[in-house]
Image 1 (cartoon, one colour):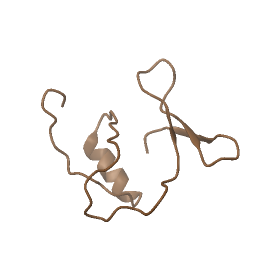
Image 2 (spheres, one colour):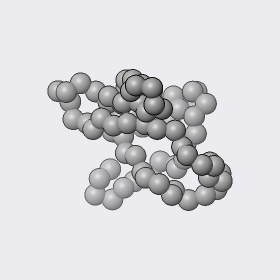
Image 3 (cartoon, helix red, strand yellow):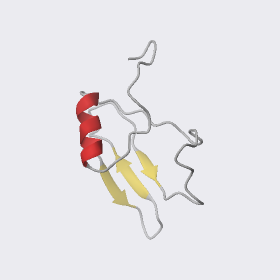
Length: 82
C-alpha cells in the first residue's frame, strides 16, 4: 500500500518495517501481533495513532478499500497541520 518493506526478525513474531530509503524523511519501526482480544468495533482508540504522509489521501482511501482494509476515521482537517 505505502511501498514499505516488512522483514521478520528472527524466530519471534516481530517484523522490522522500513518506510523508505535513507534519503527521504520518515521513521522506520516494528510490528508485533496484538496480545489479547480485539477491541469492539465501536471502541475508541486505546493504543496509539499512526500518522502517514501520502501524496493523495483520496487515492489511498480507495486503495485501502480495494484491499479490504478498514477506514478507521473519516478524512478531516488537523488545524495547523493539514
